[in-house]
Image (cartoon, rainbow, N blue to C red; front, side, top):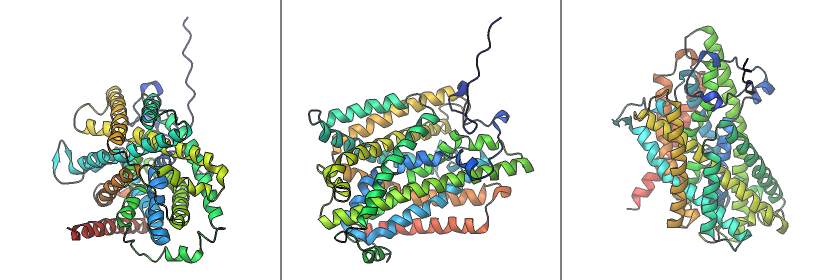
Length: 470
C-alpha cells in the first residue's frame, strides 16, 4: 500500500503562493478564514506593509531625502512629514477595495473611465511611470556598486553591478511571497535602527541641530533651489506612487482577499471583510511608523550634517558624502556600519521593487488578454520573464547615465506626477464601485478627499512653476 504524501506545514496566517501550485489570485471557498481578534493575533497577520517598507526605505530616503536636506537645510521638513502621513490614507482605501472586491490593483484601476487600448489609460500610465522609475533602480545598482568598490577596489563598479544583477535573478526567479517577506523584515530592521540612533545623537550636536531650525521646517515654505528635489522626494518618500500600485498585490498574496472570500452580501462575509480590513489597517500603520522614523531621520541627518558641512551628494562622490551622516554622529568607526546599512537598504529596495513590479506587470499582460485569469502557470512564467527584464534594464541604464542622484530624482518626479492619478482614481472606485456594506465612516472618506486634494495641489503647483520657466 503506497504511503500518503505528508502534508505541508502551513503557517496559520499565510497560504504560500507556491503551495501545491495554487493561484493566490483566485478566491476559493476552502481558503476562507476568520479574521484574528486582539492586537497580538492581528500582528501575526501583518506583512505586506513590511515588504513595502523595505521598498520605501531605499533610494528615496538614503539618496533623495538626504540630498534635499543637504540642499535646503531644515526648510522642507514639513514636506517629508506630509509625504509620510498623507498617502497612507489613499493606500488604506485601495486596500479596502481590493479586499472587498477580490480584484487586483490594476484590474481595479482598469475600471476608471477614459481612453483605452486593450487596457485603460491609468494602466498605461503605470507602465510609463514604471519605465521611468527604472532610473531609480539603476541608481540603487550604482550606489551598491560604489559601496562595494570602496570595500574591494580591485573589483570595478561595473563588475559589482553585474554581480548584484546575478544575485537578484537568483533570489527572485521562482520565489514566492514568504521568501520576500522574510528578507524584507531583516533589511528594514537593520538600517532603520542605526539611522534612528544617528538622528538621536544629532540632537546633542548644536553646531548641526537646533529646535528653532526644526520649528522653521514647519512653516510650509517651498524651497526655491531645491524645489524639484522636494517634489521628487514627495513622490518617493513614504508610500510612493510605485508602492501604491504594489501594495494591493502583496495584500492578495498574503491572503487578505482570499481569507475574506467571494462577496455574497451575507452577514458572515461582511464581518470577515471588516475584520481583514482592520488587519490591513494595522499593517499600514506598522509600516508607516517604521518608514516615517527612517525617512525623518535621514532628512534630519542630511539637513543637519551635510547642509552644515556644505556638502551635497553628487555622481562620483555620493557614497563618501552620505557616509558623513554616520561618521559625524556615531564616530569614524561607524563607517563600516554605514557601508553595511547602505548595502542592505539599497539592495533590499532593488529586491522588493523588482519582485512587486514583475507581479504588477504580469497582471497587466493578463488584463491585455495575453493569458487567462486562472492560468497561474503562465502568470508565473511571465512574472519570471519580467524579473529578468526589470533587473537587466535598470542595470544597463546605470551604465548609460552613471549619476545615481540624478537618476533617483528623475524617477521621483515621475512618481510624483502619477500620484494625482492614483488619488483621483481611488476616489472614483470608492464612490462608484465599493460595496455599500463595506463603506468606511465619513471622516475616512473626508480624509481621502483631503489627501487627494493635497497631492493634486502640490504636483499641480510644481507643473505650473515649471511651465513659467519656459
